[in-house]
Image (tube, rainbow, N blue to C red; front, side, top):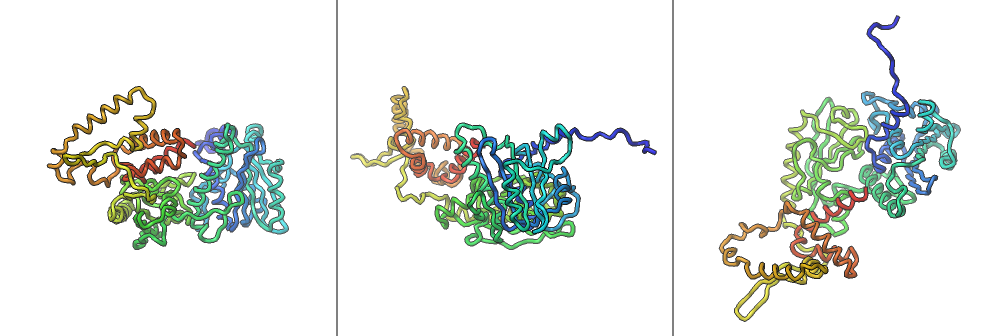
Amino acid sequence: MRNSHEAEEIAPEAGHLVESLRDFGYTLPSALADLIDNSLTASARNIDVTIESNGPKSHIAVIDDGTGMTLETLVEAMRMGCHGPLDRRRIEDLGRFGLGMKTASLSQGRRLTVITRPGPRRGPFVRQWDIQHIKDRGWRLLDSTSTVAAPYAERVRDMSTGTAVVIEDLDRPVFLNVANEDEHLGRTLEQVRQHLSMVFHRFLEDDVVIRLGPTPLRAWDPFLRPKSMKLDTERIPFRDQKIEVTPFILPHHSKLTDDEHHVAAGPNGWNAHQGFYIYRCHRLIVPGTWLNLQLRKEEHLKLARIRVDLPNSLDAEWHLNVMKSHVAAPASLRDDFRRIAADARRQAEAVYRLRGERQIPSDPTPQRYVWKRETIRTGVRYRIDRTHPILQSLLHCGCAHESTLEKVIMLIEQTLPVACMLQESARALEGSAGGEVPDNIDDYVALVVHTEQFLVRTGQSLKNARNNVLKTEPFVRFREAILSRLSQVTTSSDT
């Protein structure tokens, strides 16, 4: 007899649901990271990532030498939600919702084929999701391989154990259907390389090999451990578990070579990568955050990076999302994390201010100041240097107001209130210390962009033009902040 409280059973409409599942917010780098999670959970030591742009044959593939799956396990793994977030998992299991392989793959293309071999005399087994087939027939798997996936089936057949995940009918990656596809593909590969080298750096350090095309990835160590100051590790008890927290204070950039300083900045720049680094089973989830502690990212705190190791049994308490890209500290831990953050921020600021901002770039060419000192018969005077790149770009840009601008510059020179300025203490004058990044840093960035474009038109390369601008006063004082902003602008324009 039917329970009187039950009403209708309403199954989700397969076609609509699978289209919705494609829009969790994956980028190509984060989707590939989710697929590599499965390879590492299967104990893979060698993982190959292929991104092929070739018209209708364009595809993405991840191949590993992990334990592989039996046919029964494969079929279950293809189920949407094959494991729930509350299921007990092995301590090294990088999964979470039982959705990652499917949603990550279908976020990039409309056909997913999985080929797996669990032993020398078993398989390979093949199962496939095709979105059009789902719309036509519902949740029914296919057991075929396309011409694109067939070579990967042969590759798995030649392995003792392993799995290949092949994504076809691509419609989301940004390098598709653009005029300069090779350029966009190159940028995409670089973004993937940086992301995977960051997310899986501890596995790469443990001799796991991840290749992008034929090239093995190199681990990106966010803590620059050979040169940084490591503070004491705290083991904070929480729900019968221990959360390990280890702060690092990175060295002042005068202690680094230009290459070391550039690499340590990370994919998103120094300021973006300060704060807590949240790891789950050694896999990086968030590369720099002050969590939900109401703490701001500041230029003078950028040397503070704090490693946090979480077990996968605390996912719900830390509000881990489907893409494994966001967490929030539980309320009962916030005081501890705020205390640790305050100490790390204090020590990072002390190191940052030890020598002040990096006043002189590694290029030995002298700075050029906006003001220049001239000795005259009656004493000394200060004039604005018309050969400064900023002034050159304004005075020689072909604008009808060039002569007016020259008169304004003369007016500024002749009305400089020297007598009043001499009566002020040096510390009281705004800009005299030059350590803090100004609130209008975006205006500085706009001037840099305008000037380097002018210099490019005069025949300089973009690299030389930017270097020439950034070694001048006042930009040299905020060189790293300006480069960070320029990097953000470039990254956002590429996505």
